[in-house]
Every structure is written in C-alpha cells, then in structure tokens.
Length: 486
Image (tube, helix red, strand yellow):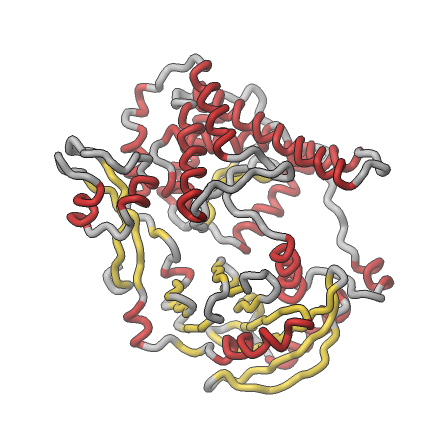
C-alpha cells in the first residue's frame, strides 16, 4: 500500500464514534454484555482465493459508496490499460483484476483481496510519468496476487497467545514491512517486464518523502510500528534494485511523461464541484444547493457520503450525511435511534422538534459508551432534496460542554445556497503548459497564472527548483477559476 495519512489513537477512537452513530455499527456500552454477545459482528476470515474474491467485492463496493470513485471514463480506461499491460508479466492469474480511481486528493494507492486495485486522484497528480504510475500499479497488483491480506490474517491467528502484546505487535509490523518490500521488488519486475523504467518506483517514493517535508517542515521519523518502511528507505532500496534489473524500453510507449500529462491535463485539484467545495470552514454544494458552516479551526473532511469536521485533538466530530430515504421524519428518526439502542447500547435521552431556518427537523440526544468512555451525541434529522438528512455531532461526555455549542451552531447554519455564495465558489484545475526558453519556475508561474508557489511547482514536477528551461518542456501548473467558467 502506498499512502501518506496515518490515524492517531484519538482519531481512531472518534472514527469509531462516527461509525457508531452514523452507520449503526455494533459497539457495546459498559455493562451491556448480553447485547455485545448478541450483536457482536462476525469476523471475516480469508482462507481461500474464493474468500479473496468475496471479501474484495464487498470491500470495493464499500469504497465506492463511502469514499467515491472518479467518474472519468477516459482516465479510468487509461489506468486500466496500464494495469492490463502489467498483468501479462504475472505467471499465474488467480483473479479478474479491476482498476479504479478513488476520488481523493491524498496521494494513495491500495489493493483489496481478489484483484481490486485503486489509485487516487491525488496520486495521479503527483506522478510525473507513466513509468512511475506503472510501478505503483505493479506494487498493488503484487499485494493482491501474493494474497498479503490473507497472510497478515494467518500471522495474527497463529501467534502464540502467551506472547507479550508488544512482541505480537512487533511481529505484525515486521511482516507488514516485509510484504511492502516484496511488493516493491516484484512490482518493479512487473513494470520492467512491460517495458517501463523500474526506477519510477524510486522517483515516486522520493517525491512522497519530499511532499511530507513540504507539508510538515521535516520528514516524519519512522517507528517500528509503521505498517511499512518509510518513503526514503524504500526510495533508496528501489533505486539500487532498478539498476540491477535488465529491461528494455517498450518503443510503443514513446514519451512516458507526455503520455501521463496528456491524460491528467484539466483534472480538478482539491474539492470537485460535483461533491461540494470548502471555502475556509464554509462548505458550498452547488449541485444540491445547500451550504453549511463548520467550527473554525476544526479539521475538515469531505467524501461521497459525508462532509464534516473534527477537532484537532480528535475528540469531537460533527458531520452531515444524506443516506436515508424520504418519508415520515419522526418514524424514520425513531427507527434509526431504536436500532442504535438495540445494537449499540446507546440510549435516547431527549427528542425535540426544531427548525433549520424554514426546514422542520427533529433532534435526538443520545448517551452511551465506546472503548470504556462515555459519549454524548446530537442527531438532527430533516428532509431535503428528496432524502432524509441528518447532522451528527459526537464528543466524549466530559467534553460535551466545550463542543456542544459549536456542534449546534453548525447544525443551525444549514440552509439553501445563496446566490452570493454561489459566486464565491472557485475550482482549481491542473493544466500542462510549455516552458519558454530562459524561463525559471517563478517567471513561468507569472506568465501562466500558476497558483502554486515555485517550490510546490518544483515538487509536483519532480524538479530541483533552480532550473532554467531550454524551451518546450511540459510543466504542470494550477489555475483557479469561477464555477460558472467551468
């Protein structure tokens, strides 16, 4: 798996709260052992390739629903063509491999059991040529082909029960790193066999490391509990390996940088208008015609099903979702809360009719427990755009007084999108331009109205930052425009 984001223990806890209140996942409160025994979810065990196919299909459907896929048939077909070219190098193919693009700006790639391979929109923007993309796809194909998910399960299942918890965790982490190294090595071989430069894995991993330095000011120190080696370590190892591989360039590929840039030219960077856009803490959705304002200073998140924010400490969250059908508001809200009470040990302590501007709504207050902590939640149900929507606010009960006013302000801010705010919506797109002879990145940026700084432009294009162009080089830039102009 190639990714950048990791969750802290607090954010893992609050994610559990979101699932608990938002999706009705079973979780017992203290003192509710009978409920826990009755409703404990079944554990999925992957033993055979048939299990891989079943589990992978279900997980892929969840990814499409929860995160969302990029609806760009031409770009998706381009990624599929590269994937199928790489598959010719697999000696045995146990699965019908599928390739898709996740509508996510975080540079990310992952494989699910059964041959489902995903790359993110942000990874495509960060890649600089088809060689790099092919190496990433090869890496993920190997994860699926070698059934690494099943191997990880087997390791955990057959470890001795008397081992110290830290030893068990270290063994799992070590196996995770070994699998990543295997996927790097065999993925490079797949790419080389298909006529791609295996050095692409190293250059891409190095750019991931540089991106992290740019975002946080310094490289993150690796720890033993990382699920895979750090980007710098992998980049160095991959560079050495690529020099040892014997490969021949596929002449039909031509200029692999031009091939990739031609496909991503015009791609939206950041929030897409179809899924709504943030302007500071305000969220505008032109397609569904609504706006909502989240607490200032909270971390903002947007996916295909939900938009919301969480505290920087990770101990409070508020989000909006619209996954319930249209119908009698009170009946739907009662059924939803009754399911929570039955499955999750969360009790409704108050029901109240409220209004969101001109919209009639009902608000439920719930109290329960998760991971040994008491939580408090406010869920406001209301009809909008042919569905029943809800705004959910969750926090530990001890922090309720600190976060409740902000959660309620967010709830009350929901309203139809105003004409003035619609005009404020901006869309950012990646464009590919030709450099002029004698230009540096700063002069090129001024001429092309590049919204990226020279430093970011250098990173995105794999440059050092001090280049003087000969003229005719392809350069990725960012332009910002009004929604109406797009």
